[in-house]
Amino acid sequence: MYDRFLEIGFEAELNTKEDPELYELAYEHCHEDLNTREASIEELRSMIYERGECLPFRMDDSFLLRFLRATKFIVPKAHRLVVRYCAFRDQYPYLYKDVDMWELVKVKDAYEGSMLDRPDVGRLSIFRFGMWDPSEFPVEDLVRAGMLMMEIGLRQPKLQVIGGTVIVDLEGITLRHVATLTPTVAYQIVGLLGLAMPCRLKACHFVNYSWIINTFIYLFKRFIPRKSWDKIHFHGYNLKSLQEHIDPECLPVRYGGTCRNVSNFGIWLTKIKKYRDSTLDQELKKVGYMVKE
Image (cartoon, rainbow, N blue to C red):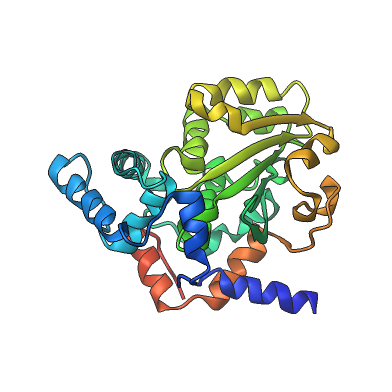
């Protein structure tokens, strides 16, 4: 029964339809009003054309809606986010252009996630970079995998609305890992967490760390907007502290939770490949990925 439930969840990853119950959540979380939504999309589209600061590869309603939802339908903020998104893509084309997305299955346990997707937590994603062996593949592949997750996940209207929560688990991190974390990589990770992507980050929680946390914070601090620091929480090895912020029902067992609806990146990407359709293939090719059969 549990396996079947998880399988249904994987199939739902590719669902881009808007269910009627989403509208109430969209109003609550994103200030989205169905009566004015079309006008806001058109205002954003006109602003992009008129200001000429970027040239998105898509300009359709569903694509622009992502940026409006991420910025609570404040059109000028949505426009700035579109500009940052395009600039990020222009600056780092090697993160997606001609990347064989199915080969990224090798990332495996470095990313983990729950598909419980509650409005209070959103999609729970867990970064476990200590599970990555730097001798097996470069750190850029971790960033590529993160970007691919965002591009696929943000096709879902529900995830656009409820956003997500991130746990950065530093257990197993060594100096070999730290040596790969350049300012460029740090900026790219911050970009994927909302600075340059149309996603709504509810909170970021650091757990299982020692003195190495100082290196991480030093590298990331310069790129994180001041207003976002209240979303970042440090728990050390105190799982009770983590559970005060995230309901144990949403947490995997290792963090004192009861959630079994968890899979690693390798499993998730394998299921995406299994359940994908021609629409997904065409959209990802338009992004720039190499989509092999």
